[in-house]
Image (cartoon, rainbow, N blue to C red; front, side, top):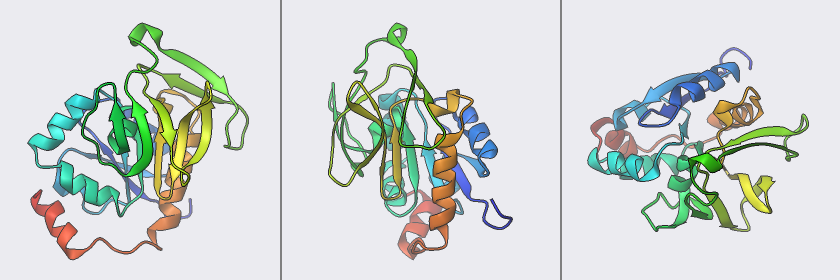
Length: 213
């Protein structure tokens, strides 16, 4: 990316391999920043919600009064959720039901492919240029339904595993665990492209980010 257009992308550093996401972002032309509290959302151009245990992440967000601020932030900035992050973005979560940000028009079923030992590394064609993509699935959720406005970029067993809806992206696999940086590069490029065109964060949201309420 040209100098002056390098996006600053936060990584929610609560759980999951956020360090691997940061490395992938650096290799994709972005500047990563770890985010652990609402005030650290200030000044970033986009955000990654990594994998982990979605109920644990949810409890952490609710304990810090982070949930509502994060939902408002995700409504006005580009966000990419992977695995548990995709669950957090979905409009509905099943198996079992749980609270979510409700921003991505998708129904997601948790742990749909089984236990940790049922994890898999697959290589498949996608809508991304450059040939087959390696996809690492670890206790992966399944998108059982997506809305008409959701663009499907990759599939597994006829179910979407990589999608885009406006400035939101979601993957049910872990692109940060592969050496292939095309998924992170796609997100970094979309953040850079939309940064100058998006409306600024409102004064109210900026205040809530600073105070965490």
